[in-house]
Image (cartoon, rainbow, N blue to C red):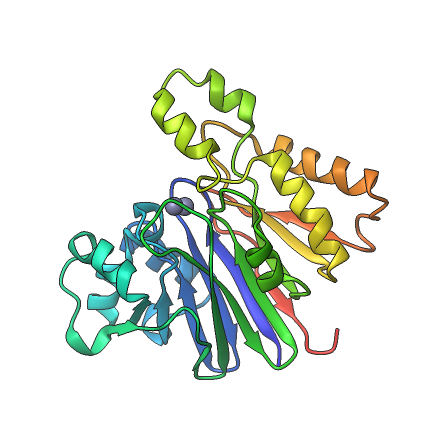
Amino acid sequence: MDMIFCPLYSGSSGNALFVQAGQTRVLIDAGKPGKTVDEALRLIGVEPQSLDAILITHEHSDHISGAGVLCRKYRIPVYATPDTWLAMDKKVGAIPDGLRRTFDKKQDFYLGQLGVVPFAIPHDAADPVGYRLWCGSVSIATATDLGHFSKGVKEAVSGASLVLLESNHDPDMLMANPHYSSHLKQRILSNRGHLSNDACANALVQLVESGVHHVILGHLSGENNLPELALQTSEDRAEEAGIRLGHDLSLDLAWRDRVGGVYTLKEGA
Ligand SMILES: [Zn+2]
Ligand SMILES: [Zn+2]
C-alpha cells in the first residue's frame, strides 16, 4: 500500500508532519498553534477530524504547542511515552482521559494500517523519541532533534523509503548570533542538542549507504541557517562521496514557514 508524507512545518519554530497509509492518518508532532496546523491540513485536503492520532516526539514547545487544542477540538488521541507526558502535561492543558495514550518506546505498535516503531534519540528532553512508520515494505522515518547521529538512530532509520533528516544550523552563524546566550549556544552544539549542516551531510552519506534514496532536510533554524546553505552542504558532501543526485538520492528541503511537498511512496518502487 502506498504511503503519503507531508512535512506541514519543520523547523525550530514548529514541527508537524502528516503521514497516511490507507485509511490511517496521523500527525507526528503538532508544534504550531492548533489553528495553523488545522489550516495546513485543510490545504492538503485533509479534514483534521479524520486524524487517528498525534504522535509526540518530545515535550519541547516546537513539537507540542498545538497538540492539546487539536486533541480537544477534534477528539484526536495523543500518544507519548510516560516520561514525556509528565514533562508536557502542564503545557498541553487538560487531555480527556480516553485520548491520553502512552506507549513503551522499546515496543512497536499498530495504529490502524500503520506500524509504529519508536526509537530513542540523543536530545535534551525527558524521553525523546523518533519514529519510523511502516506500511508493508514502505517506511518513513524522522531523524531530527539529534545532538549527534548516534548508532541507535542510524540503525533505526537505515533503509527507510524516506527520511526527514535534521540540518539545523551552521555553527559559524550560531556562534556569531548576538541574540543567543552562550548557554543556549552550548546546548544547541552539545551532543544532545541539534545536528549541524556538516553533521547532517555526514549522516546523509551513511543513510544512502544503508539504502535510503529519498531524504528531506528539515528542522532548520530560522536564525542560524539558510535553506540554500543547508542544501549546498549536503549536496557537496554527497557528490564528494560519489552519490549521484537525482539517481542514487533525491534530496529535498522541508520549510519552516510554509507547507511542504506531498510525497507518495509506492510499494515496491
Ligand atoms: Zn527539541
Ligand atoms: Zn525541535
